[in-house]
Image (cartoon, rainbow, N blue to C red; front, side, top):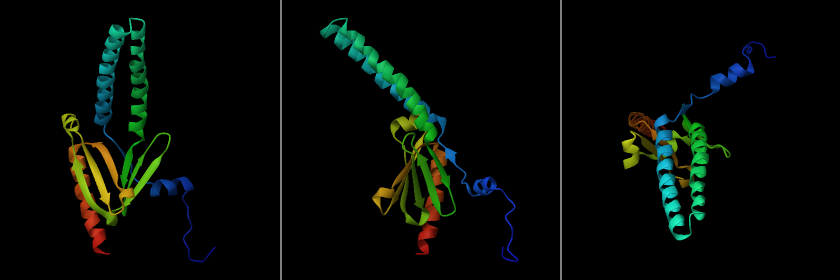
Length: 172
């Protein structure tokens, strides 16, 4: 051991937690919106398939109309798992975006590489009070998005990322 060097008195777990970024999840409104869209579209498909098969092929074939509700049950669970997997963290030099259930994907976007940060909100998102943040960089492969944020949080994040991006790119 070197003389005069400070000793590490903390445990490895404490060191990791100190370096761990503060992750934020997506708001529950995004999950509600996606589940409602799932129920509406698969509900319409169930009714249409049942009527079509019942009229054209006979009542026995109309039993195949139970497939969309089975897909709906499976999709309900999968949407919840997917929603829980999304998170993002702002660090000193970059933005982290993590997502995925089976295949985890973590995107790191350095603030100095950001060229454009935009907030978008389609009609369904606006109805549910949601907005998405889209990040554009020089390399198209590193473009990233954070869906389903509260509009105030999306605007705050856009302003902060734009400010940090301008400050970091000014030093280049």
